[in-house]
Length: 240
Image 1: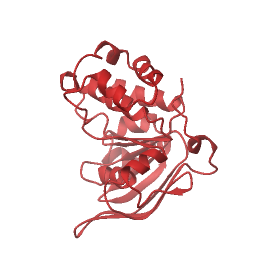
Image 2: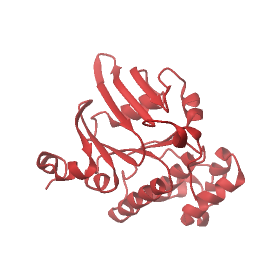
Image 3: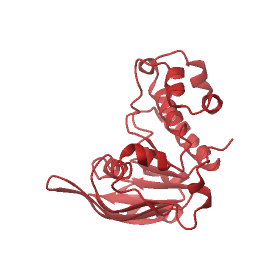
Image 4: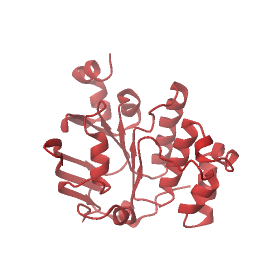
């Protein structure tokens, strides 16, 4: 079962996502300062502490905050487009905090965004727990179940790129482990993933490449393997 269906993700030459010189201001606060990165395939980790700019980067890519610079998906500029047009271009966003509808059941949530009935079945196949809870409202789900629903909802758009913001936030250690295993599985089925996380250890374990964001600036970058071995990173981010 592959979620990769957008032509942009499989047929474009060069990197899927290219961000160059991205700046975001909140009033006088310079939240993102000349951020540049590329993603071709696999899982790309964006690691940083809380308040360093990860969510702002998500919001800039998805059109939720004004930004300057360039954000190209499969060579097409996204900057300046409305969020719904960016979604149609192939970007799915799983936001921090899940943001599921508490009054809608799991089944109602999925059917509301599904293009085809088989897409709902695919989500239930990937998340058997959601199939068991299909008649429960979003507000009745555990944090892990809500995260599964948020991911399933994002995959419903059959995106070229899946952006995830702090998917492990608020989960128990066991569920955190399972969540990262799930992210790796989704990627192996063909879905490129841009993963924003504070959990550097788990992120570097599944990522192919990673960037460290400090105060809105890319402080370090490299392959996940190289970065996991970097003495400075191990001391400052991994606590080793």
